[in-house]
Image 1 (cartoon, rainbow, N blue to C red):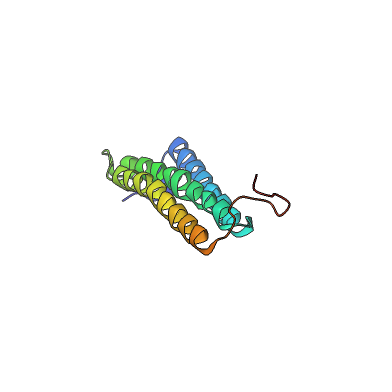
Image 2 (image 1 turned 60 degrees about the vertical axis):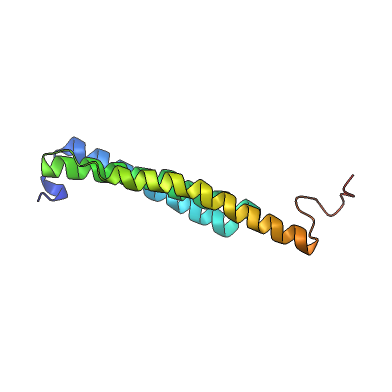
Length: 118
């Protein structure tokens, strides 16, 4: 199998850029998860990393192994489809469970302290 040094320069650049973009998007999602104050705001940040971040790494993997193996390698697309389908479903289920919990406990959702609810 080829190493990254044996790849044509244009392929190495594309793979490197896609890996860096994927890693940066995943990092942004992780930082957002840590910095956002409420549970409902934190739900959105990790989806960035799991969808676009995985997409960048997946495309880099497809290109690298297709060029290195001299044949199309597309089985990574299954990973992308799985992540794309499961991430929003998990997000919705988590949000609904938290909303149900907050409503059953009588917590006010999305209202500021000075709001009277009218």
